[in-house]
Each structure stands twice: as structure tokens, then as C-alpha cells.
Length: 104
Length: 177
Image (cartoon, rainbow over all chains, first blue to last red; front, side, top):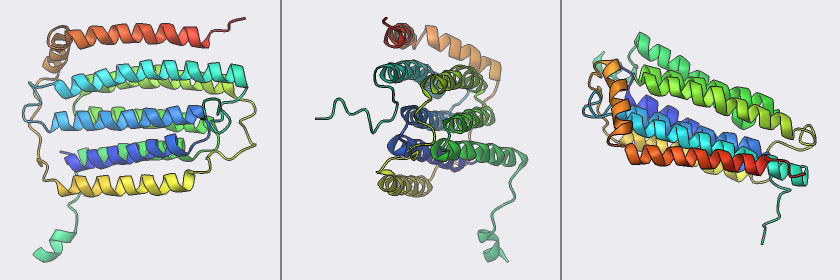
């Protein structure tokens, strides 16, 4: 049996990598990839906590939540990429340092 | 001898060895996403990380979630991201650094986050052994029943959300000329 802390450590690492990608990458698509990594980390946690719950055979809420997160991530990435393509069409760049139209 | 035994970690079982291999794949993929200067290499690392997460679900005996992960993330999201990279390439290659000016600060913040998370999760006395899952097919049947029973309203809302999001994505990405 894999210890629960191994799952959680892996998830913490993937979350940190995603956070760094979304904070420090210059390209908008790379930022979106970081967000996907963070959602995956949350999913690993949900499944791991389901597995170590009191009655994993009867109480499947953790898996249901993980599936909801997967579906919401699909919707999110579709809208995000459409926005990026729209920005690229209008401004010929996906560099986040250059897209400062809304800066106050 | 018994004092020494405390400091030597026990030899991992076969399941744990497989988990370690999958975790290594996931970690290498995440590193590629974060550090690769070429966005295509980032996308490949993302696919590796997605497959690694799916393997973790299989080891945790959540087979349906693992298959959904491969179908949705590797099959759809990774393909979509690759398309977007190809559509928006051009001036992004070879001119600027892949990271912005705040990457040093971000590295410090992220390292601190990771250290705090690991310290926290090692401080909590988690249950050591999970209960047996039992019949896998019964779990998949239970998932189906939950989606039309207990979770029916969130499920339908999710269907509407997907429809609206995809229609909105088409509207946003459409060429207006």
C-alpha cells in the first residue's frame, strides 16, 4: 500500500510547479499549462483522500469531485485558449508582458 | 540494531516501486513545463505529467477517473494546447527569455510554499492503511448512479457550463472578417 504522504508530497510538488509556471512564465499558453498542473494536483489529492477515507467502497464523493474538476478544467482551457488566440489575432503577441491594455 | 533500523527506510514493495516510477515521470514532466524554453517541449512535459497523474489514479484504484484523465487531458486538452501553440507561434521564439522579471521572487515564494506544504502534511497523523475498495465495477456503477441521483443538479449545471463555455470559445476565437 502506498502511504498517503507520498500522494500528498507528489501533489504538493505538482502544485508548486504549476504555481511557478503561472507566476513566472512569459507566454500565456505556458501560464495556462501551469493552471492545468495545479488542477491536476488538486485531483491527485481528492483521489488519495477518497482512497484513505473511512469507506472507499461505498462513499465515492472524492471520485465524483475529481470528475467534476476534470470537466471544469476542460471548459476552462477551451475558453482560455480562445482568449489567447483572440489576443494574438488583435495584438500579434501572446507575451504577457506586452499585453498591458487593462493596466491602470 | 533496533535503533539503527529506525533510520533505514523499509524496502518499497512492488506497488510502491511502481508509484515511485510514475511519480518520477510526473515530476520530470512538471519540470519540463516550468523550465523548457521551447513551448513544444513544455507541452510534451505536460502530457507526461498528465499520464503520470493517470497512473497515480490507477494505483489508488480509481480506474474510471484515470481513464477519464487520459481521455480528457491527454486526448483533448493537450491536443488543444498544441494547436494553440502552433497558431500563436512566430515572434515568441528565440527572442526573449521564457521567464519574466519576477521569476526570482516567484521561485522563492514557490519553494517556500512547497516546504510549508510538505512540513504540514508530514506533521499530521494520517491513517496508515486504507480500507479495501472491494468491487471495482460496483464503484463505476455507483458513480453512474451518483451522477443521476445525488449529484444530478451539479451534473446538469456542468453540462450547461460546458455548452456555454464551448459556444463562447467559438465566439471568441472566430475570425470576424
